[in-house]
Length: 124
Image 1 (cartoon, rainbow, N blue to C red):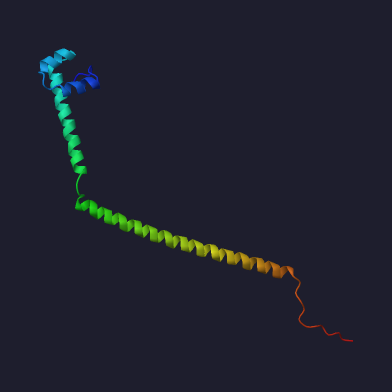
Image 2 (image 1 turned 180 degrees about the vertical axis):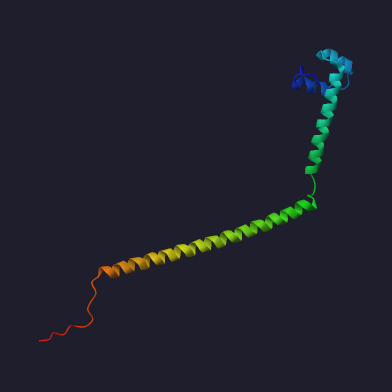
């Protein structure tokens, strides 16, 4: 393929199929085999495009359905595990808060002077 041709010129060549190869080649100043190569390349590109487009249409294959089911199951498992994790974290936070309260209560008990339960008897 001749690299002298711009993309727009190649598109014009592909769209001007009613003329002969030699006429088009002389118009663009290239060899007629370059024009034939452009035709072949354009056909290959169009075939590939239409093949990929036809694969995208229609009902999904059974394999894709199986993958979708696995994905849905994995998502629901993830959601369940996320909920469990959140509940565990809330439980940990609650226990930490209770521990903090008990620690503060113990500090308060240590600060207060202890009351004597019985009066001491004086021996006189």
